[in-house]
Image (cartoon, rainbow, N blue to C red; front, side):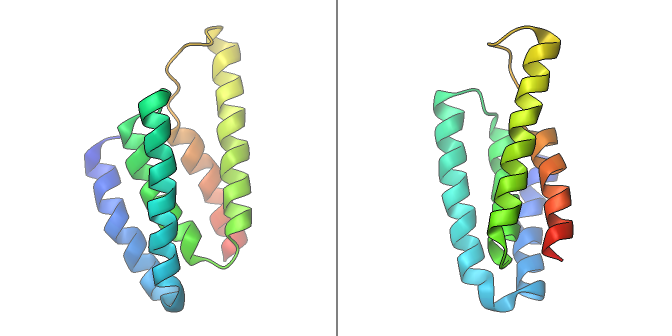
Length: 116
């Protein structure tokens, strides 16, 4: 994911949480930090791209600001796992680079509908 999309999404996510769930802003930022820490580990030891790490920051902030984080996290994980399986079957290469940005966004979009 290019920086021109992922970097502005982080302050936009903070502004969204501040507008929709102002009392949860601190928790949302904490979730963003925790999710980025986990994604950074995956970027260092696995093949997660740094653009995906920056995307996860904004998604973690928005999901952390809501009161139903479980729904968002579950849907994101399921979409990510399905994306990996489809990619591995189509390519037939278990060591192929897997772009997680589309899976993250695909999983997050329905979760926003659940949250609102």
